[in-house]
Image (cartoon, rainbow, N blue to C red; front, top):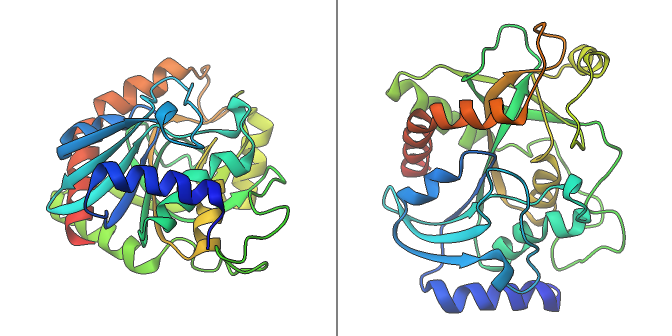
Length: 271
């Protein structure tokens, strides 16, 4: 059985949302508006859910919203938790483990990311094919909960090939350009330096950001099929001769929201 804390959170959520969700969505910076598309919503503030911290990052509403999207029962995190907020990685990935305890098998993670690939442009979308963990941190360090997964686990297909294929099909149907590439995780909250971006590019990164990777590791540990999608909201440091700001990230996220919403809805429908 999962830990007592995970069970308490799962039981609290299940008692309030009714039917068990088929898929969980984690909506990143400026992308939480998708939760407003959920039909017959039941919204729970993070602060009311046992074990959930409060999200403090800009563009993160801090609510869990359950209901129907594109005919599927879903539960969506309207904002996530970040390591740079001062949470332990165990707390950052706590919702992923709760989703597993709820019986969910598919996890769809979104984020706002910086483009390290010079062929990208702000406003582009990218399926995450693989990642680089450049932090030296891992949410599974410490005693292993055998009820969640084995001590050592495979990451070869952490980003589910079938779900990636569905995402490509959805984008093609909608006429949306969709890159596929490698996402590199830095802790933040400072944006990366030009030298760090050069390093990440040499290592094979196409996009960089401050989230997602811990959740994917935890999802692989407990056997969730995972899809990752980045909205490229800015070009990473040194790609263009201009500073980077959090306001730019939120502005581009807001501008691309209609296309992003359409893409996610179609992926959910096909998945």
